[in-house]
Image (cartoon, rainbow, N blue to C red; front, top):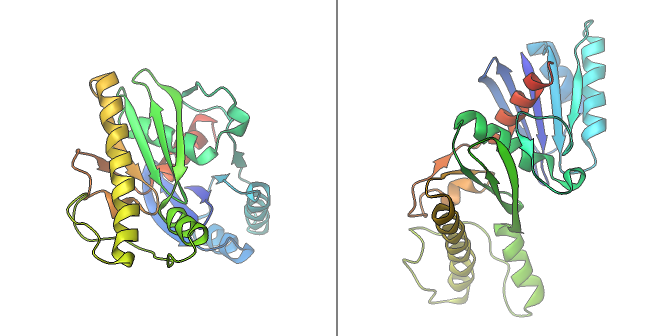
Length: 250
């Protein structure tokens, strides 16, 4: 059994793997020593990996290590960073500044679609658009504000605009706002859709053939709104972390 922990800006995503299959998945608002003890007692992982977009990676890894020691056995626990060895060649100019979740998602995508050009779109607190070449190189990508960030920005920056949240029904571009709340929601949601379709169109033209993968907490809001065929895999980061753990012989 292998334990993967993906600490994002708003949630902690946990998965336990048996080989390449996810045996158990869980989402928490925060990590705790009690969660570590529970997971170790139930699954006795033979290795664990922690990825964090915040400064909690070492603390969570230490928490898991303590739980393993208290359970009476030994197992390696690693913290994944942008410069950690992976099955992909890293073409990012500053790997030390690369968000580990972005690279882990790229590894996960390459594991699911080997030998394919990939566009990986992660709809999280921020939206990231990352590229992987068919010959196994992480090429980098772009970062844009996520859905909630756009709602918050409109509310903070425009004095009379209310704070909205959530999804809108229907496909991209089907409706036009008839009142302010709808105008905000449609502006945010359709804006992300048009942005996403633009990236897909641009990179399809460049590569002729590219597989697009949606992941992240807000991916479900967009997978049925986009006209271009895509694959959705909400566990992509954890799948990549499991592959990285295997690659580092843990």
